[in-house]
Image 1 (spheres, helix red, strand yellow):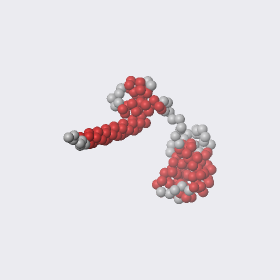
Image 2: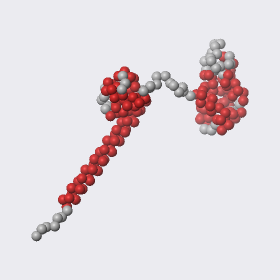
Image 3: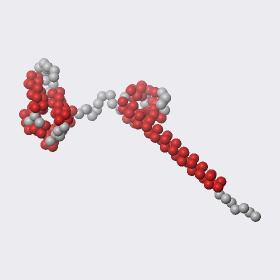
Image 4: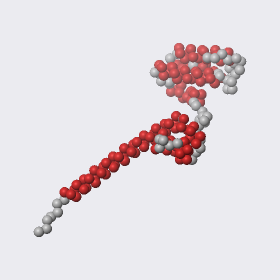
Amino acid sequence: MTVRKGTTPKGAKLPSETNQWFETKALAELQRLPTRDWENMAGLWNLLPSAHPATRRRILARCLELAGERGDPLSIRFVKRFAENAIRELSVSKAPRARVHDEDGFRVAARHSAHNPKASWSQLARAANAKRGTVRQWKRRPEFQAYEEDAKFLVLHEQKRAASLAKEQREFEHRATVKKKKTVRPKKF
C-alpha cells in the first residue's frame, strides 16, 4: 500500500486516510473470515464503491486469490451480487493501446511468413498490402508469432498429408501396373 497525500482520484469518495484504514481492515477481515461468510460482510460491500479504484481492485483481487488458495468456491449469492463489479474492476479495457488495426493483413502476413520463412519485410508487406514498417512492428508482437506458429503447423500438416497421398497414389499405380503385367492372355493357336 502506498501512502496517499490528500488527493482523491475520480470515482473515490473516501479521503486518503480513511481509504487506507478501510483497505487494511477489509484485507484483515477477508483473511480472518471463512469464504462462505464474505457475502454477509455488509459494511465492506457497502463501503467498497466509495473506495479508491486501486483499493477496490486490490480488495477484489485478494478475494479471488484467497478463495483460490483455500480451494473454497464462492457462494452463488456472492457471485450474483458482485460478479459484475468484479469483472468491471478487474477487466482489461476492450480497446487496448497499440492494437493491430488490420487483423486480416496481420494474419495474411503471418501465413505468408510461415509458407516463406526467408521472406523479407517488403515481401510480407506486399502480401499483406501493408507498409514495411508496419510488418516489422507486427513481427515483434507475440500474437504474430502465435499465428505464424499455427500456420507453420498447418503447412507441415499439409506437407505430410500431400506426401502420404503421393505415396498412396504411387502404390496404387504400382499395383495397377503389376496387375496389368500379371494378366495372362490366352495364346492363339
